[in-house]
Length: 209
Image (cartoon, rainbow, N blue to C red; front, side, top):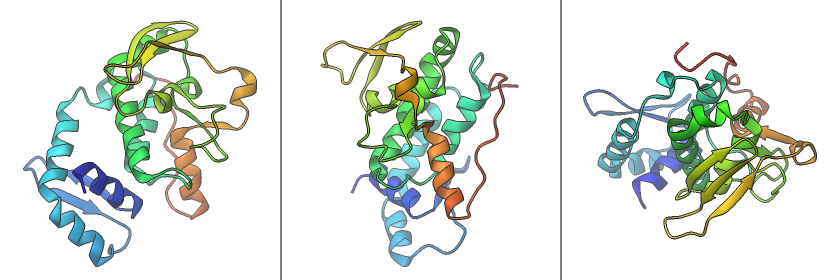
């Protein structure tokens, strides 16, 4: 098992994982996790710490991104700390969080200026999100190794891997948006159904507001 898979399993078990400034990995949960989950965390402690450190150093914090809507930043932070909705594998959800974070850090302001919105970028269909293509946003289609090449008002040039062919992602239309939600709202709804956690707060100001 890789550190990324271990981290995804911890999220799936309802365990929030954070890294202190001194390098200590801290687990937060509403109740004591099963012994097997704690044993897995201990076995992969160094790898998880390295992964969290790499994420921290990969780019600017989501609360310090100028000209990016606060709702996007708060939503992706919520997504990264949440467990996956029913029907989405833990590893795929963790990869979506990483891809979405990089998308905001590298292209968030540019996409916002071009009038792209949360459903265009982070949308998933509320019913069978992993297997229901209408409503899939850019982040889901990019996958773990995807790359944005250029942005215009109605389309994004992209490829799904270093050796992938150039593809064009076009903004979702009204029919495709029917039943779609930003990924973080899908996660929030799943947790609210269980009586846990409020959805992320919404603001329209920049992330550093």
